[in-house]
Amino acid sequence: MTDLDRAVALLAGGPVFVLAGAGMSTRSGIPDYRGPGTRERARRPIQHAAFLREEATRQRYWARAFLGWPAMRDARPNVAHEALAELEAAGRLAGLVTQNVDGLHQKAGHRELIELHGALRDVICLACGVRCARDDVQERLAEANPGWMREVSLAPDGDAELGGVEGFTVVACEACGGPLKPDVVFFGDNVPRARVDAAFAMLASASAVLVTGSSLAVFSGWRFVKRAHEAGVPVVVLNLGPTRADEVAAVHLDRELTEVLPALAGALTAR
Ligand SMILES: [Zn+2]
Image (cartoon, rainbow, N blue to C red; front, side, top):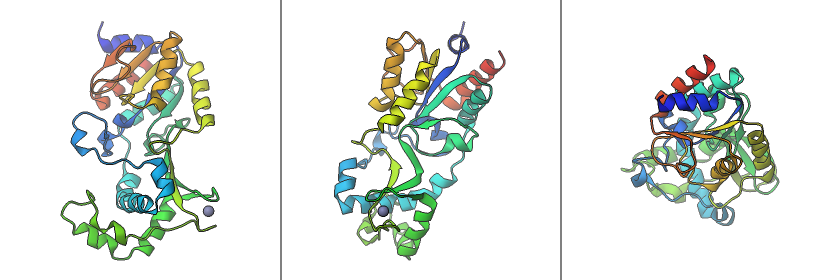
């Protein structure tokens, strides 16, 4: 019996709780800063407290985000996202909890999911709480910064240090003038309690857990695997490289997701 056969056997018994991470989207061109071979690309992540406190941090965030949004907006799902959507359509899932903020599961046709860390498509006002679309904010940023893109594209290292951040104009909430924040959970912030509870409720109805493309480095995802393990629910891990769950996983397929996940979905939906 191969490891793939063992994984299929464990996941075939009933509804599967899927926890998806950044490794899902690397083949869609969205970098995984924790994945193998990407250590040298580590940058200073935005800290939640600094974003709230410092105008300069918000300016740095929005300047980078302004440059990065077109690629994020136009990214396409890959066969790994499609495989999970097929499993959902076949009634195999208790639910999907994703740590990704890129919206690629929905683009692949996935219907029911919890975006644990929020989504970049939405922007929220820190003062009045009103929400708006990231696409609209992008348009306003473009209007507020004519010519800025041209200056930056002349910089030799692209967005690496973004020498022109000081000249970038950040836009404010149209309703109240308050500061805008993407509706995502930054480092140092907590996932909203109601969202965590909904994910645990999903987990309670599952007979197995499948981790796809996450090293489980952050607690926000690891807690579900920990809970499952304590309850005796088998855990299957599909991830390139070691994970925090390797000690507790019944099977760890250390392989490229875009190869192994379609194979797994094909075997499960054929049963
Ligand atoms: Zn506002």
